[in-house]
Amino acid sequence: MRIANIAGRACIVVDDDHAVDVAVASDGRYGPDPMTVLEQWGDVVAWATDLPEGEATPFDPADLECPVPAPRQVFAIGLNYRGHAEESGMTLPEFPATFTKFPASLTGPYAEVLIDRPAVDYEVELVVVIGRAARDVAVDDAWSYVAGVTVGQDISDRHLQFAAGAQFSLGKSRPGYGPMGPWIVTVDELDDPNDLALGCSIDGEVLQSDRTSDLIFDVPTLVSELSGVLPLLPGDVIFTGTPSGIGAVRQPPRFLAPGDVVESWIEGVGRIRNVCV
Ligand code: ZN
Image (cartoon, rainbow, N blue to C red; front, side, top):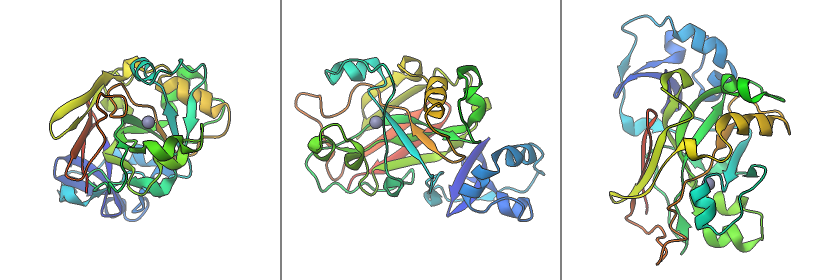
C-alpha cells in the first residue's frame, strides 16, 4: 500500500494519479489528518485491505505534501554507509551517530529548496516511518514496528553543521531542508526491504548511487538500538543516513545553487524532485 498526504488529507494511492481519500472512504472513522492515520496504523491497514472498488478519484501530483507532516520525533543517522564514512575521513561509529532534523524543516516531495547560503549540500536517504509504539524492540521484530518507508533528502548547511562542533542538528534544519515523499510505501510491497537501490542526481547527473544493504546499521538495528534508549512513537521518522557522493567532499565541492534540480529515488518506493531557488 502507498499512503500519501494529498493537500493535507491522508489518501491511499492506487495509481500515479488516482487515490482513495481515507476519511471519505471510511465515513470519517480514520483521517483525514495524515498523523492520526499513523496513530491508528494497524487498524487503518486492516481496514484498507478491504477497500471497495471504485472509491479512487483523480489527484494532481503537485498536491502531494510531506507524508509525515508533524512527527513528534525525527531521528537522523550520520556516517551510516561505509563509503560515506570513508569519503568524510571519519572512523566508523560503533553506535548509530544520531542527531535530529527539527520537524519545521520537513517539506513535501516537490517543494522548492531555498539556497541562500554558500555550502548547502544534498543527501538522499531512506526514511523509515514508525507505525506503532516501540520500546526495547528486538532486531528480528523491528520491521513490524515500521509503517513504511519513503524517500528523503537530508539537505545540509555544511557551514552551520560544523559551526558548533559535533552538534549537527541546526545545520540540518533550515526550513525546507527535509523534503520527503512522494508517499509512504508499506514494507510488504518491497521485495527485500533491506536491499533497495537509492540515488540522487542534480540536473540529470547521478552523484549518489548505492544500496541500502550497504548500511552500517540497517533498519532493524536502528529501530532496535533507538528503541532501547527511548520510546519510538507512531509517526516518528528515521532518516537512515546517506551514501557516498555528497557535494562537500568533491573536488571541487559541488554545493547546491539556485536553478539546480535535485532528484532523489529509492527502488520500489518512488522519486522526489526539488528545484533549488
Ligand atoms: Zn544525512
